[in-house]
Image 1 (tube, rainbow, N blue to C red):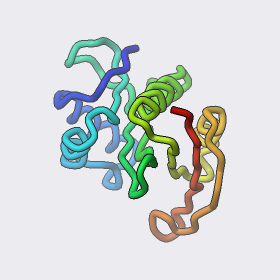
Image 2: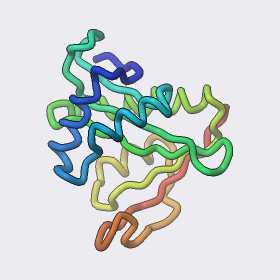
Image 3: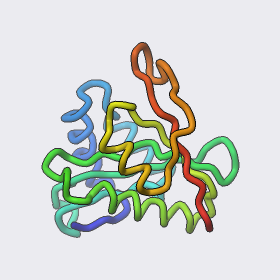
Image 4: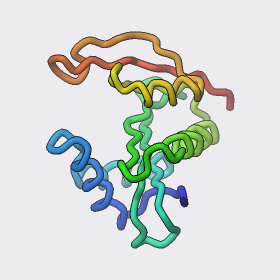
Length: 152
């Protein structure tokens, strides 16, 4: 498995991965194009091999927050075929290292409370649940707000 910054050739694969898991609620191609243009160093993919044609097993994406030195982890998604193999942890480890290199001191994310595997992963990486946000993504779409303080 190779983790590297996202490339334009990854975008159709990422959109397909999103659609597979989230159907119409997933991020579309246009979002990935914009994310790559705006936050290229905060957008990582995990592939089977280092070439551009290799299958994508997952990605992690962060974006600067309104407060200086604060960042939002927008998404971590691992394909069904890659789950249970440590890909999510590897992506998050690499992303958190990149965030520290960029001088971010605080990382925030939201996660569905019933996504126990993700909550456990984030907690093992030092994130703490700070709030339960009711209807955060719409009616009946509750989310935990999680926070990690980072040393730079």
